[in-house]
Length: 588
Image (tube, rainbow, N blue to C red; front, side):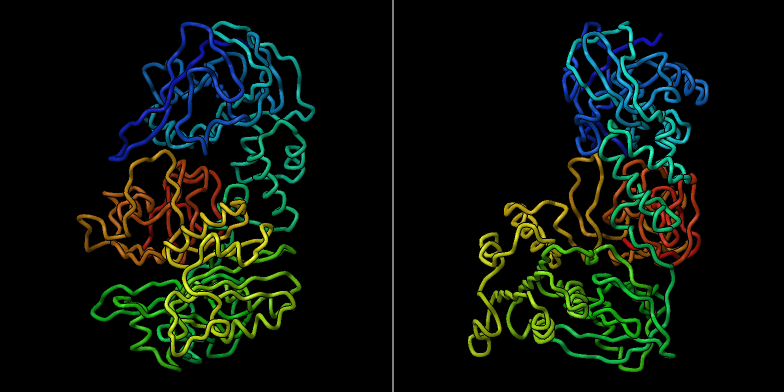
């Protein structure tokens, strides 16, 4: 007979961890009285990170005393206590290998439904003082599971747990957990899992992604876990390309067209992607690695990059001063997830300054396809002299049957710039100006430009009713970080770490412009090195389970310790559990 042994609750608090502050409620304490189970929570309980925990389908976390005893023996712990695995209900007689998603149970006067296995993160490792715990729970098939509250009611220790209904599709917590996290994703089992009505929406989306890969025949990596930023893996390494032309686009932008010397075809880029350049330096210094968006339309004959020259820009200065037609440059394969999606929806290209480059490639693509989609080209520049691609964008727009242009100059030149000809309005884009432009709220928006512009435009678009999924962004110097539970960290520009050495393999963070020698004593993973450099990163488990940290491997090779449960696609790596083998370039 299954029984509820303990009800454990705890409210969020700040704790210190590795010199950082984590807002978390991982400490749960047993109650000595009965407790009300409400729709979203037990009374007296809370979650510090609502993005990853809590909500209707994760209202109550359940863990088994049998599993707790298993870990006590495996890890040689002196003892375990109720709530040690951050669980709300400590139970007996409900192993993950028997309980099925969709099963319903009555406990006390409340009714519960099993919705998903637990998604473990680094914080459970803090609670039990075992950094590997997230991986151990997942790989062992003992993750525990979540309840949804179907009927609110009172529960308490020693209540009997009575199964009152079974799911039609009998798939256990252990089976569902393995289907997502292991390297094996049989199509028939994915289809079965998707028929379980009680399964939470996040797990369904992951299984839909895996099923889509199964249908299309794609192999390698885990599409159910890989973040959007790692969705288009490509072969690591560089190829030598010849500079075919150098074209001045504006007062501060020059385009370089790159081709193979033998005129053999290049890998086709997706519109919006970029390439990484490897530029040699004198004096034995490591090469410069810089990312540049491709600004031309679909082509297997050439890549065109368009470079803005700014004071102090080492790579741009190198290109301006040293690169001429006929010279050879080392160039990576196209990469990046800021790509034009196939859709009948209207599309808005919203850019400022050199942010026009990736969206110009998208406009090129739509024009070459003779697209009938509604298209808006909205661009902000200082004045006509600093407005690259004006003629090209105008020509491409005119070739489309439904394209409107709206150009803002912040400081138009009174003698050269004519309102209504070279530009539409004076000033900057704002919520009101976007509304005046008439962009439809059902459109997909592709947004690129300086950091302040990006922040302001995302806020303006949200206020105008655009959903997060409609707003696609490209950040030139990295990605949006994800550090769950971490609070109070100041945002700093990437830099070399304190006490960095002068020996060991060089790890280059290509998008952040940081080259640093690897110290295998100071850092256990490339993630820890990136954090020491304040390079923007994304992570959750830190042990090779969740794939949130999956990133592109531009060149070089890596080793894993510990081994991830399911390896990423070729051309990607998990930075949370990898170390460089020789000089390595990471797409961060």
